Image 1 (cartoon, rainbow, N blue to C red):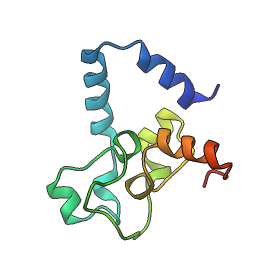
Image 2 (image 1 turned 90 degrees about the vertical axis):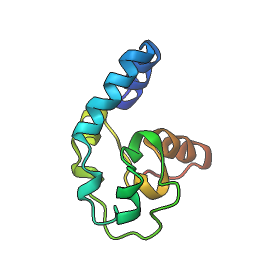
Image 3 (image 1 turned 180 degrees about the horizontal axis):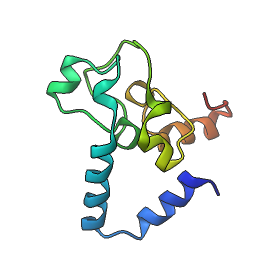
Image 4 (image 1 turned 180 degrees about the vertical axis):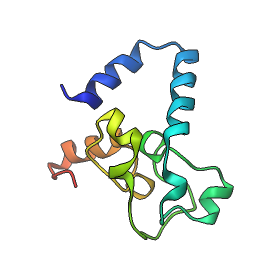
Length: 105
């Protein structure tokens, strides 16, 4: 079990209050606003934590570079993927890779 898988197991044991506190902690660590792909629409919609919440709902459609690998959230959570704003959360990307047998990028 890798770091991310262990974190998912730990989350299952959290109360709603503990989950909210963890989300707030990760929001404080998130570097999405500094990413070249994070645009004005995403900023105005307060879209953050794509690695946890999933891809941008309507704002981000153009890849202008990715800084996910250098994000403190990525390091703390043991993520292996990137481009969360366009490809979805770590959990979703891992599921897709497992389903289709693709390699993680």
